Picture 1: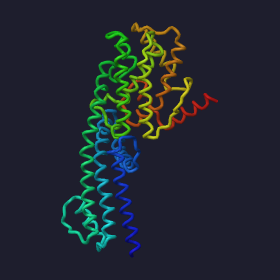
Picture 2 (picture 1 turned 60 degrees about the vertical axis):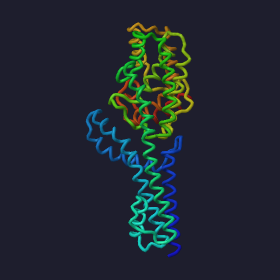
Picture 3 (picture 1 turned 120 degrees about the vertical axis):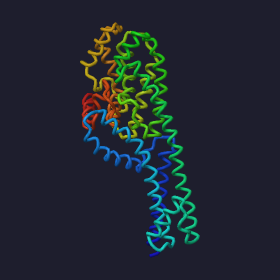
Picture 4 (picture 1 turned 45 degrees about the vertical axis):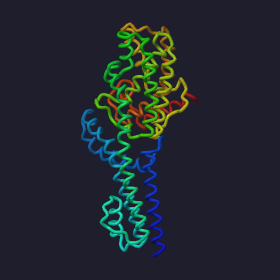
Length: 364
């Protein structure tokens, strides 16, 4: 019997320590950490939401359903942690002399929620009660301090996403963005856009990996999305660098690099498979026909284009290949609204595998 109590006590310590470690990784650690317990909670919740999504017939209905996914997932984490701590301490109380598992459960609940209706049995249980009460308070305090941080990061993210509607339409389009700047501001004004979005990409790389729930927080407007906004800005920069006959702006290059690095690191959190060193000739999800149609539309609006269309296509594909797979994968993961050249062709696992095989064949 003594051996059984020691085993149960050790198991309780491991359960409590593992729970605290998960909470620290999720709420405190300022870097990307793929926490098993957090992943289980969010994946289980997604299955529940999937039951409701089956009945949704329009994107607006799916958007309203999924808008609650990330907030509910966040609010579920503390109760899950508290229940695991309660179970772990219940085992420890039983191992230190509490007569039955029921009494051990009552003692653990009394201590964790600082109710105090069960007095300590001995010195060991007194120490356990104090430590459990402290852990319960810490877990609640972590959530309270975490929520302002995550909503502050969300607000910063959405500022530029909302402003993009004025510049690129809704849903955002690289073609529309170039047309509007050519007509209203002049293409030289895009320099300020590249500077602002380079900073934005750097910020979401930090916030959406260390605060991973932010990935699933949806924009206030159903047709807005941080993923489709990323795609529109990156495609605009790629078209400007490859196809538009304008002076080279090195800031556009920096914006593209900041963008694909940010999207890749966010995709790493979700185990998205992509080629970290793609070649310019690797296949992308944009077809040559789509590219030519975009160039024809820009030409019709008076946008000056480079005369060599074939070289422009090769250059555009060489830029796009850096972020094509991860952009489409994140659009699928977040169920992003329709947008040209991103969520309209979201990568599913089977398509992702086909693209990977096509890349391997093109190199052989």
